[in-house]
Length: 379
Image (cartoon, rainbow, N blue to C red; front, side, top):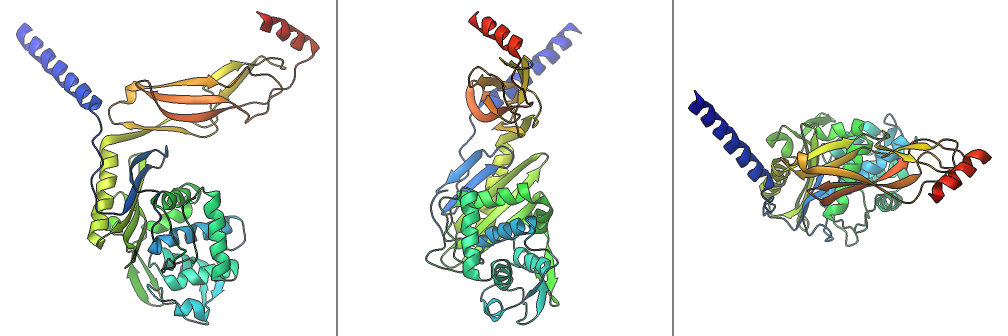
């Protein structure tokens, strides 16, 4: 019996040792995929898991419509347009070449149908109709696209139309278009569900969603394909497995199948080798600081947004976090005032840094409280 127990113990030790050794092995390089540029991002933490030429300016083709969608969603959120608006189709919209929703000149179409036509069917005609309804003209809408791009920090992109047909002044980067996709998922989850719609019927014409990931990976739920002869085959993809969501951008692939396989290879790489966890919830105290000269002497502090970390699978126990204070905290102080940073490390290496803010207002103390604190601070 003793020998059997020793054997079981030895097996357990070997398995544990092998698991630890595997967790400590370096993450392999990302897969080599046929693309001019790509990027892979963890949605929760924003960490870049893989990239190649992510800041190179490339032709976007219909990936442009991701930006068009974001602008329309923002205008809806601000009450400037509504899903129920009836949009009169102009001759310019009707005549727009390329992929179509088959709207008809002089007819009225709901704004929601135009959005579905653009998202699912990649309708260039629907994109122009949306632009004209929101801004009055394609040119004015392009200005709005660039304005929102600037707000999102898209420093390497410029838009001239809402559909992505070739123009010398129309270009994006893989990093920039990923920012738009992330913003749609984060800000407009109610509209993002449309990107996983398999087919849409308008004017008695049913068209399938062009995104191949929806048919190849049951965890995929977006986002958009693009193709012109100059741009090659492009695809922004997103998939969620358990609580982890990844967003990939592949630009300039040589064929439809190549862009699909490249996207799947990147997504599978990220899910295989990385983990993503919420470490601290928003607006929950992570520490209580001494505050001086106030009407109270303690101040709860914490992050103003959920704190996530992306790290190598199997190394959760190697994570640590500490608060780095800016300076001595002195009243008065308002809720939301930054008081330092929460630094997340993996085996001593910094992997995330987020602001920590005051979670309460603290007013200035009375004369006695301030005098007492002045003396205490001397010691």
